[in-house]
Image (cartoon, rainbow, N blue to C red; front, side):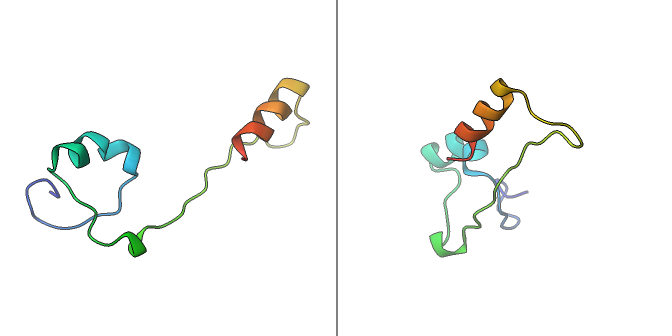
Amino acid sequence: MILNGDGVGWLPQYSIKRELEEGRLTIMDESLSLPIGAYIYRSGARLNQSASASGSILSL
């Protein structure tokens, strides 16, 4: 719908990178960007050393 000119949307920039580069989509107002965090966790269990290290890298 957005590509057809039928509205606006909040989409992850990585998912529309090509459309932005080609000029098919544009960011209307950078101040409307929403910072969204993503979290990965294993419920109810301790993380092993590798998972803990990965989590440290991802949280940067």
